[in-house]
Image (cartoon, rainbow, N blue to C red; front, top):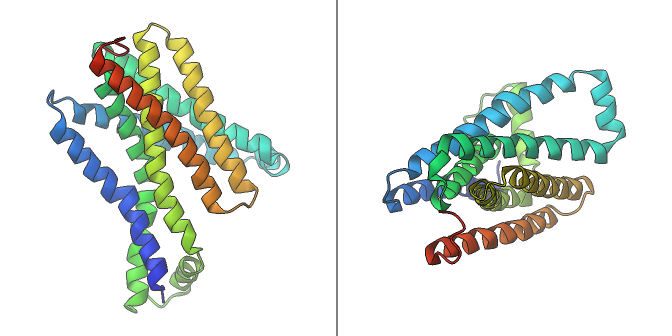
Length: 261
């Protein structure tokens, strides 16, 4: 049986990774007076999906079948973490840059950066957390209602789910919200540099920031520290990027200076 507190953790993770982001999506669309917000969100969502799910993940899967790559990963955990962090940052930064530079173009404003950044984070959240959470929720309900098929495969699934630390579900849900805030901040920053005709500098800064964030979280996880230390690190990064986002939004409203037209 799935304990009530574990079930609550799964529900919390589902709310954070699906319910809240979708609710924010609807809110942003309704609040937008230009009619462009949904397009920006979809552009961000699609670009992340292509960059990570269609390109990077299959490439990493192919590399993982190579003995030399497996040896590198096993013998150099820190360098491997850096490699994964850098490539994730590279693909994500390239995706957000291409969308803002060539799809949004002349319409680079705070709202376009907000929308594409939110869509980017939403895509990542659904792909890496939302789908698995829904599966876990369905399996949990089947376990507690004794409707799970009585096969060895499903028994293994049930045992694996039941043995998961309760804190991992609460932490995963919290981290997803923070990650979306970080993606919004990164898109706002790169939009600023594109608008200032400093695209190369913006790309480098966003790539570096993304890599540092991913590497920090990865190294904390590797250390065996509490999952909440990872959440704390994500909170610090999210707070910094949110501060940047708010500053640029206020600057655009005040038009002194007009950071993003």
